[in-house]
Amino acid sequence: MRRMTQLTGRPILGIPGEVGGRPVPADLLTGVRAALVGLAVVGVPVLGLWVITPYADDGAAGATRLAAALWLLGHGAPVLRGGAQAPLSVTPLLLGVLAVVRLYREGAALERRRVLRSRWGGPVALWAGYCAVAVGVALHCAGAGLFRSRVLLDVLVVALVAGAALAAGVRSADPEARAHPVLGLLDRLPPPYRPTGGAEAVGSAALAAGAGLVAAGGVLVAVSALLSAVAGGGRGAALLAGGPAALAGLVLLAVVLLPNAVVWGAAYALGPGFAVGAGTAVAPSGTRLGPLPDFPLLALLPAEGPGGWRWAALLLPALAGVVPALLLGRAAVRPEPWTPAATAVAALAAALPTGAGAAALAWLSGGALAAERMARLGPVPWWTGLAAAGWVALVAVPGALLVRHLALAPSHRTGLARRSALRLRAGAYAAVLRLSSRRAPAD
Image (cartoon, rainbow, N blue to C red; front, side, top):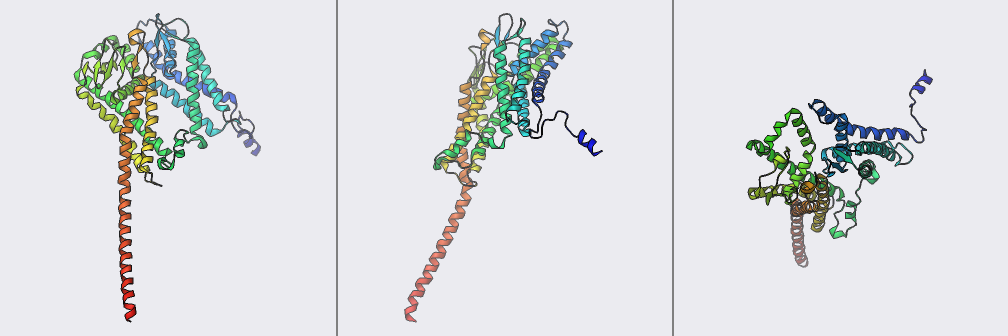
C-alpha cells in the first residue's frame, strides 16, 4: 500500500526534482490557452449577434473575421477597413486591459512557481504560445474582406504587448526587483532634496493621482449621459431604428469603448480636450463639431458653442491632486522628517509618472476610424500628459507642504514648551546658586 501511494502521488508530467517544475510544452499550452480565452471573450458575443441577426450579409467566416479584428485591435494592432483600405487604429481599451491583466497574472504565477532552471524559460514559452495564436488570428484576417490585417505589423504589436505584460508580471512577483528603478533615483539626490525612503510613498501618490483623473473622466461621462437622458431625442434617438440585434451590437460596442470615453473625459477635464474628426475640438473652452456617425457614446458630446459653465470641469483634476498631497505630506514626517525641498521633489516625482501614464492612455484611446475626416480621434497625447503632470504638481506640491507643516506643528510646539521649561528651571537653579554664593561669606 505504501508503494502504491508513492506511485499515485508522483506527478504524471513530472521532471527531475532538481528542476521542480513543469516542462516547456505545459507553459507553451498555457500561453495558447490565455490567447484563446481572450479570443473567446470577443468571439462569443460576435457570433451570438450573427446568429440572432436576420438576413445577415456575411456568413460565419465574416463574423469570425470581425472577432479576429477586434482581438487584434484590443492589443493595439491596427487593421484596415472596407474596400478603400481605410485605417482603423482605435484601441478598445477594455479588451486591452483584459488581455494585459491576464498575461500579467500568468507571468506572476510563473515567477512564483520558478518552474525552470532558467528564470526566463517559462515566460518565453508562454509568450511563444500566445504569439502562435496571434499569427493564426492575423492570417485568418489577412485576406480580402471588410477587415484586413497586416500580418507582420499586427503580430509584432501583439508580441510586444504580450512580452511587456509578462515581464511586468514576472517582475512584480520577484521581491528583489519590486523597487522601481526610476523611483530609486530619489535616494541618490543630495541630502537637502532627498525624500529618504520615499519611493513607495511616491509610487502610491502617483497611482492615487491617476485613479483620481480616471474618476474625473468617469464623472464627466456619467453627467453627460444623465444630461442626454434628461434632454431626450437628439442624436441618440436614431439608434433605436435598427432593430434589436443592431441595438444590442451598438450597446456591446459602446461597453467595450467605455474606457476610451472615460479617458477622453479625463482629457476634457484636464483642459486640452479631444477631437472627433479633423478640424473639430471638444474642450471646456468650447466645442466645435461636424457631421458625426450615429453611435451611443458620440451622442454624449456637448452641444456646439463656447464653454460657459463647462469651465467648472477643471475643478475635477484639482480634486484629484488632494489625495497625493495627503499621502506625501504624511510620509514627509515619518520616520525621518523630510525638508520642504525634499517634500516638493517627492510631489514633482509623483506628477511625472502620472503625466506619462496619461499621455500613454491618450495615445491608445485615440486613433483613426477611417480616412480623411475621421482619421483623427481622441486627445493629443503630449498635451494631455503635460496637463496631467501640471495639475498634479500644482495641487500636490503646496498641499504636501501644508500637510507636512500641520503634522510637524504639534511636535514643534511640544519642543518649544520643553525648551521653555528647561530654561525656566535653569534660571531658577542659577538664581538659587547666586543666593547661596552671597550668603556663604556671611556664615
